[in-house]
Length: 182
Image (cartoon, rainbow, N blue to C red; front, side, top):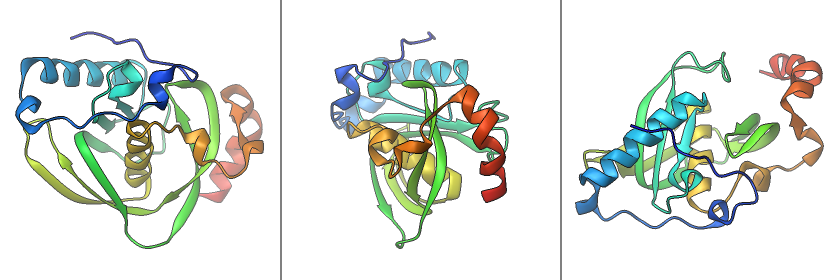
């Protein structure tokens, strides 16, 4: 396994729509190695998720996991989830603004509106169909990673850019407000 280079905001790969992965390619050694490398990279940088185009690969693959993550200390645990060719649909109209960061936009945070519940349909790393309902933080991460696969970053979803903050300033000035609003 290897730690992959993460594309930063401004690199064109982040604005490219990823290509669907043919089902017969999911089990290939190359795809499985990419998934393993993405998981290792996500864990190395304490990400909650990572999309393939963030590591310069235009494939509809994302990995998600939260287990005692120092960047998200209050987040509920999310088991390792491999998402291939995702289709995400909101369940209702309810949205909530919440703080997001991104490995491709290092050291920044901003408030982003997201649906509080979504249905995710995709394939897993074994090419099995997945159909699940995700709520709250898990739903937020799914939407964030799916946006990456569609060439979007969280900044594109922000309603109010005045909340965009460097992480050090966020800790000083916003963290207390974030905890009060939760």
